Length: 252
Image (cartoon, rainbow, N blue to C red):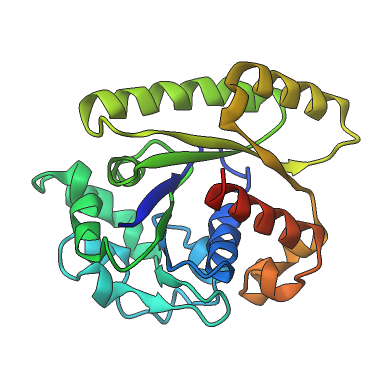
């Protein structure tokens, strides 16, 4: 049975897609069967996995509308050794089209039931907003991973996100819980970053991953080459950090 993890943060630019792509590759490198679902209309996870969003035949858009199954829409990534349900700009219109559909909040959850035994992990890259797309991701998931930068505004947004997760748990998905908080783009020379990191550990304890994702040039370069950093520069600090995160998830 697949473990489904929604990777989300209502704040943009926190390394959410970077985490989705590179954690998928790292889990796959550990021998796990992995499916990455790009639920963001910007389709950055699709491009970062080496799939041209302009050339795909089917996408997560068709899955949400019930026109295609997850198996029919998924593609193999060229470098990441994991499967991908890609996205493109069509997804931006999906929310409007889904408004009148029955069970619009749980359409992704229903679609994933047919591949439940085909994968060990399903990662969902959610858009940086509390939308119907994000709600579908949260309703389908067992747990939520929250990537965040260690800065003041991140703490403000975190309380809102935790409140949202509680509401989803109450109304749609009673088993949903926080998998962990991931500190990203971390610069140890920044005193504020250290202070926010300490506050996170005080408030959330073991929910904060031991692994910290550093600011890393190779990590920033990899999407431009259409591949996870693991296949761009395996020995970089960014690649090693995501391998460590995968190990922490596999052996908590």
